Image (cartoon, rainbow, N blue to C red; front, side, top):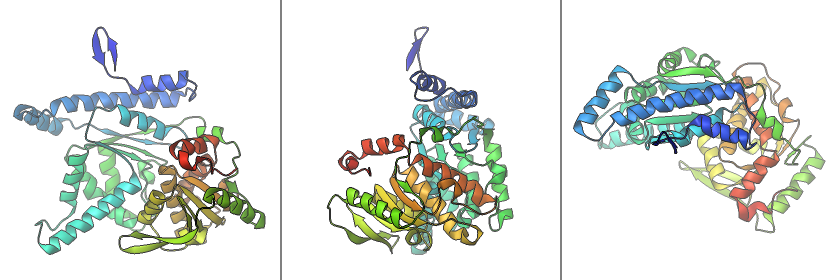
Length: 395
């Protein structure tokens, strides 16, 4: 907060952005400035709605009438990787004056939704709830917990998610939920090559009616400016790479006992071939050639702060399942700020050799994230969060 004309006013996204520029943390970018201003306008609208949602009976009635007349439209920010979308959304989330707010990776959110749906169905079988349709009660519970939802990396690749999005978000928006999301693609490109995409298309219209769609066309991928050659990504995946990862693994393990482990996920066992303390080591096949999904990768990221992956191959059209799992895996490790050590057949930009469909769109983000996770900034931030393990960073 700061004072203006004797009155206390809130700090704005633009002011926080200007501070980052002045401190040298980021470079000024006109496209980012426009998004910051748009986020501030949204905060103003949310602030007005918040004032209307007073606890008194009259305030509640006025709030209901206002929501019916003029619901707050959220914001869907799309653009290429590394342009600052997540940074700006995080500033917004920090500053938006709503206690009931939630910032979450979209894959994590949908995993939560699917869990809630399953629990409702089980409760219906047991006779403890009466509603046959799980979507309305799940949407009500989500809206009660957070009426401002911020999604990082909005992307749809799972058919089970795609089939419920229209009904789920219709119910959320009807409950007054305000959405802010970032994505690499415009709404019209979501789930582009997905199975039964025609059943997904109504969701795009619902999204565009309830969120203004804006493009962030910054000039540079700012993540690439932070590359410094930290040797945590070794290519090609040959004998020399094996020796390099073995040396890094020994440094991370620091003499702690190494053993195979398992993680229980929804009653299933996910195998961890090598584990030592908070570090785990897998082959690419262990993680991406087996039928693992979002919950499995979330469990791995939640258990281990350092993940080794040996022998990532060049991926093409014949490896669509492996590509999707690898994209999801890197998204999950990135979102959980993991330290990643990899041997691969090619540099990140050459790992995908398929066409230019949805997989290519998604893999562009994976490339950028693999590169950022090699940077000194990333590794120093990891070390700050995991000080006991910091001295074990690969040299």
